Length: 223
Image: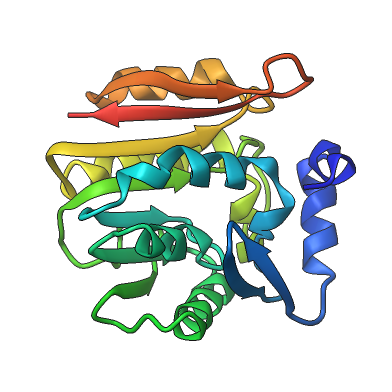
């Protein structure tokens, strides 16, 4: 991640990403993949590496759901570290096709990973997962969401994470763990109030970069 990119406002980062006109190759934590135009560039932001390393030892023999999968790095990383199966979902159709291509590139077929074009769980078949992740947008601004890439940077009033948690009750079991990545670049108080209203038990599980302008944090929610 470049500091200059991280410090740009959400709309400036969105514009930068949306102006790409060709895929490029990337390697994240020894996972090779391509990032297509109009898809969130996971490797450009320090949150991605933080989440990957934090969850690394949790995937073995677990089923995993990656909500807002982007190019698919989280699911690929989970499979590499022992996940039994993965479901990826994204509201951005470009991200869905990107994730499918990267799964094929890394040799994973539908018996190990499935990808759905869906607004949260709307089009994800009923299932129960051991681990669920939402690497959610930080910005809560109300914007024109006609561009699907905008959902990677903005969640107006955090409506999507509210919906995700409500639906997650039907996609989790008593022992499931839900992880949500965030930063105090967003509205921490609003997000935590959503957690309180969700009915899940929650905690600020991990936090880094507290001495910088913006931190990176992971919340853990359980039944």
